[in-house]
Image (cartoon, rainbow, N blue to C red; front, side, top):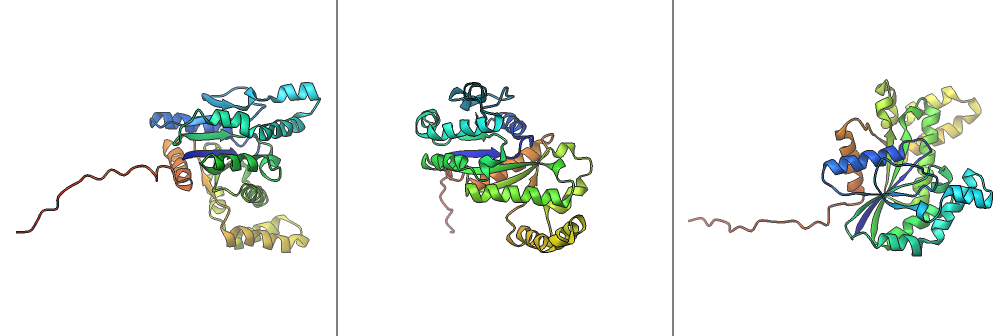
Length: 267
């Protein structure tokens, strides 16, 4: 059985930086992870790339040959990947053993993991190849400046969660850039009453029923919560990694070595 993280989130949320820091942390721990680039528009990396979608198709070539814009070209590239799951991706996965750990660095276009089925089909292919997969959704902590942006981030995360149907970990990235971390405490452990009060203060009265429904959705189902990540601290990276490992049951199937012994007999 293999293991995989699908690193998703809006553009600029720190996905590639997360992958780079995770690779360096695991290298320090003498643990092997393989980073896979799924962004056909990527230019450079701070980590060794185990697999690269640009070997199959690149955004620059698509834009030049087909006359598409950046967003349309990216969708075309990802649909081309979807068409080659049984060829290119299957051949690439043959190079990895059953217990290998892959981290997929995905593009930042939000439609790819909210309503376009490309990543969903990609995940299904990994499952058929006997991979345990976890979606890792990154959101810039500086985005959490007020309750309306928090609700927006929750809805985007929830949309990805419903679309992908995977174990899901939400991460607040760039915590090292937050000047006052107390401002984020209410959003790490949200309460419907507080959220509703703040929403009603920020929005017009006609949105009161919608605000109540959104606050209750976040609170009642407890489906959306965020784990803060400060890349300056090894302990923070290790906590996030352990959290994800637990979601995909990494290491649970390892052989347990028990020392044989003979119980002493009472005289």
